[in-house]
Amino acid sequence: MLLWLVYILFPVMALAERPPEEQWIGFPLIILFIVSYITGHLSKGWRIWAVIIQLLVIGYFSWRYDESFMYMGFFTASLVGMLPSLRQIGIAMSGVLLLYGMEVWHYEERNGLEGLYNLLPAMVAVLLVPFVMFIGRRSRVLRAQLELANDEIARLSIQEERQRISRELHDTLGHTLTMITLKSELAEKLIVHHPDRAKQEIRDVQLTSRAALKQVRELVTGMNTVTLQDELSNAKRILAAAFITIKVQGDPASASLSPLIDNMLGMCLREAVTNVVKHSEARQCVIEWAMTPDQYRLAIRDNGVGCDLADKGPAHNGLRGMQERLNLVDGKLDFKSAKGSGSVITFTVPRVHSSSKKGGST
Image (cartoon, rainbow, N blue to C red; front, side, top):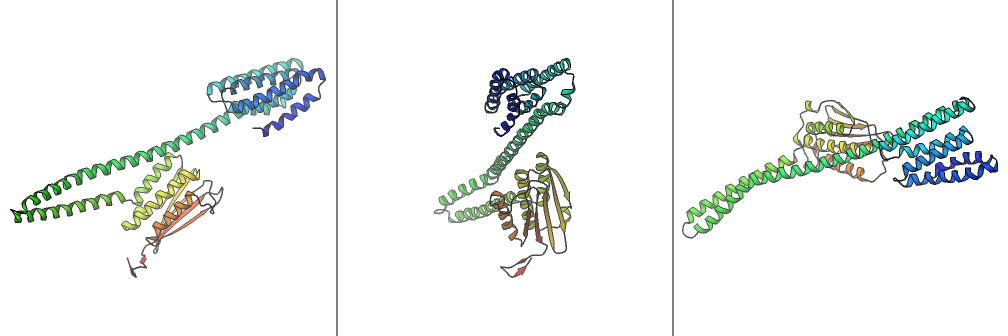
């Protein structure tokens, strides 16, 4: 804000060349202009009044001295672009147009319009700058709202998953555990006078507990099931919600992936797409799938801001987590990025991988 005040030297120097009787009111108005500029940047409530004061000062200088003082409108344009509502921007732009109209009429009466022709590009720029600033600010607000909406969707998804698990635990295990409790209590009562019936009840408890254990395993398996095809569909929805164009090359459905590899690649794709949405500021994302006789290859490429490979922040920790998953299937991760050049992350998994610990192969 203060840096741009360097350019106030030009109207100050132009005013210094005027006779002393014209300076006694000119310099106080320059000080008022500077104060209104600083106040407008610091106080949201006073911003519209700062714009009005600046327009009056510019109008006075241009009317009294010279049309070149219209260049001071660039200071005002920055304040107009920061106004909080369209109504205030409309009021301010009406004031700018009124100022321009008065100046055109004034110089047409006195000197003709030749002096204003050179100012025409600057006048047009002053009219456009506020709208460019407003659109940029609105875009940032919408992006922040989108991030909040994505976070809320993630939170609601976690909540829904917790409710689903709670329902399944209640429906599948509640009845079974109640039965185990009742049968164990009955066996305790029968063990003295009816040992044979007590043994039968104990055997029933064992069968019921095994069934409960099976139900728990099935529930846990259902919770952990992640497939590459499902995560690809989720990636399309998430990237579209973030206004990121997605292009998919290759079809993972054509591959006969083992459940373990399918799960690992699906989890890696989820993490990579999440990083694109949160950190890349990209407008396009390309997901490439390829197979060779020896390996599967999955690459995620974006045209975002990129990053420094020496950074040890959250993104670095995410890469380490993905590599740890890939280690379970002898996979590899390759990450390339540079500031301003986007990023590409590539996962490769052998189609036939060996288990080094057991010395065999699967």
